Length: 429
Image (cartoon, rainbow, N blue to C red; front, top):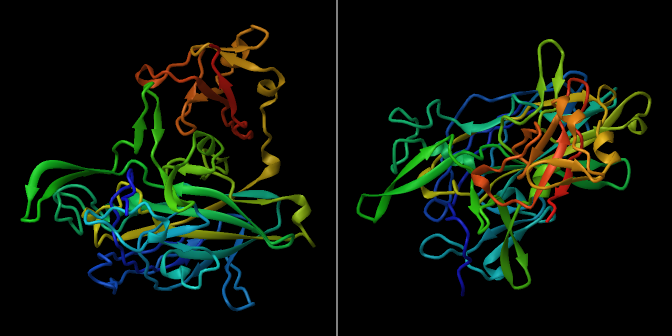
């Protein structure tokens, strides 16, 4: 039986969750599953969620009667181990190698889908319903986070300290994934995966040569502001290593998220790239993905309702799904903000009107003119990875002089204007 190469070490986790809706938080307790099948419950104050302006929310459960409001609290414990998935279908390794890696054969994994009766044993699923009287998009706001329960995560004073170094076991927050799925229950009852959120992409653990204990383990170093997980290709370009495992015939395959998916906001890295609602009433979408869209056609008697499914799991392929974080604890806070669609227009007419080409340094219209007028507006941005966007001032420069053969270009967001859709530009040979 072959071992699946290129995967991270898997950590068996037991989790206890405390839920509150709309700005909700959760606390996890984790233990090695293979040694302790029962989670150790650690108590904590319940967290709460508050709805954004002009929005109401309800938790959808077995009861047909919904309790609407802008503040809903719940206290529902659950336990689950780490899994891998694309937000829709998940897999749990039934066996591991001696060094805690997975095998290549698909029959060594257990598939978990929405139809699985025991799915709640492997991940958290929240079913929310939003109600509004205005056409708008609903975004995850900057108040949202996933973090360790301890106040200090790194350093000698770290809470819930790991035996592998001066850091907290709560660094398991780096392996958390959240999927947001919009449900159109008025039409064909369709489910659309809108976004995968990886909130702590810069959590980084690495090991030194210094041995600890008698088991051959090594001391680890951890930071919350490290390097993202990426691979450097032969041409010097980089590729993010965030992804999931899925079945491909008789074997399992690791599928990384693509640049197109980051560019389209299908996958969101970082807690700092979420919607902003300022005290003066100004709103910025920032890099947030629209999770729910209320169109004018949705309204009946001036009210529209839509559902949002939230799935939360510990991604076993992540770098921080590591034994150093066993018995870590997490807290969640999800906060949503509605931004009225009438306040924004997609301003990409200038980019769409003429085909853009590039020589790798400068952008040109295909007719040969440079984009000087657009450059002067200070609104044009470019990106090689779909995550980090830089202002285009007449020249482009890839980090470490990597030999990219393409770039993505867009208009930046303005006060009352959405960022435009990104345009793929392939360099001239």
